[in-house]
Length: 94
Image 1 (tube, rainbow, N blue to C red):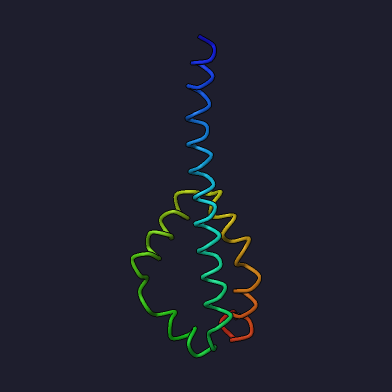
Image 2 (cartoon, rainbow, N blue to C red):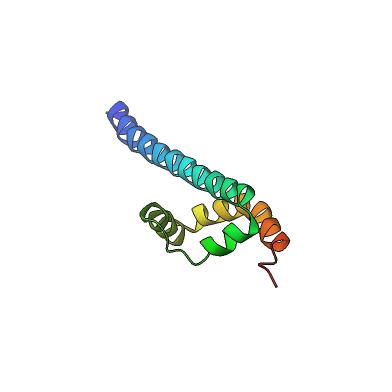
């Protein structure tokens, strides 16, 4: 009986852990994409892109970040320095 209870707890725990790991990989991939975008773009390109609407993938990512505070913190911690430095260099931060 205890083996079935252990399996009943262990399997859902693995599923949750897998989902959390996958979500972490998504956050890392999104952060890497944003960092590369800012590093590769010129100041003029960044200023022009600022007014463009978000793509469908970007909207999904933004919804995830709005709904999950932990994912948002992880994302912001990764992108903050490179993105803000580039924005400062481009005069996009007053």
